[in-house]
Image 1 (cartoon, one colour):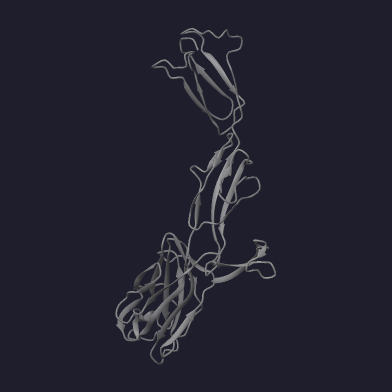
Image 2: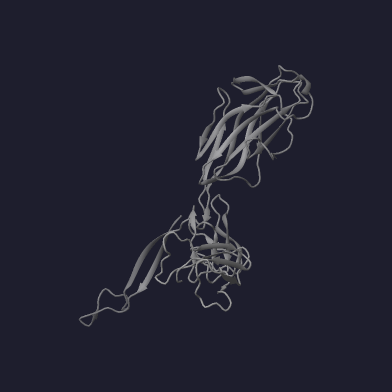
Length: 367
């Protein structure tokens, strides 16, 4: 929306040769016109839809950044073909006539959203038709995000089709296809009275809005030690302008998401990045778990009791005791000669995990 505002500034008296020039009661008035553009706040949505006409083939037409698969059917139906009234399907199994819905009596459609967007579904519209004397015929629409159609959800209840082309509109609540996912839609059909009885479907439409998605991540492995000055900086995809939040104890910059690891309290936290919704899209929220660890407990390394610090080859092994270590922490004991280098061919690295650790080394030389 564009609006025009005027700002009036009193410039006071202007004096030239002792006289007011072009003045109005000794004052000049300057009108400054400032054009301001008011931008819509929030996330901009893009209208999108998929339509399967079903009059000539199984294919769909798409508007917006979506893709769609053509019509398929379950093994419980036979193909009646395409025509002016739409696609016709027939029951392939006479034993299921007038019975309840069965797992294979369906026709299926699929809509896929891109990896960087979500699809907020606002409506599903379809036209149906059955011949006369089909009072027991029923259909129901369901959807699932799984290719095997597990955990299906109903879009409305059971519907009795009419003997004239009838439009059915279903308006789901809070149905959002996540980024990179596919929504599979099935129309289950049952109750037809003969294998020659047609159930006709036409002009199936899925309507909604494509909205951006957002993700955040922190550098691998996501667990950080409280080293002095340590920080962790997130990587974000999707809209800017969001706010980073975390539970008390994690010191985080709400604008940049940078974590002050050194100043945070040890623990496991969930960081949230939230972008306010608007203009057809809901709020976007991305989360990531991070772990802050205290530095390992400082340990004490002691040599043999009463030893002079000189040991001989083939003599009594020198035992060094590590005390004050923590369970689950890996320590490395490295023997280094006075020159700062380990002699070739001699390995002085010994590792142990947790508890009280004892390291035994019997090399010759001075260390």
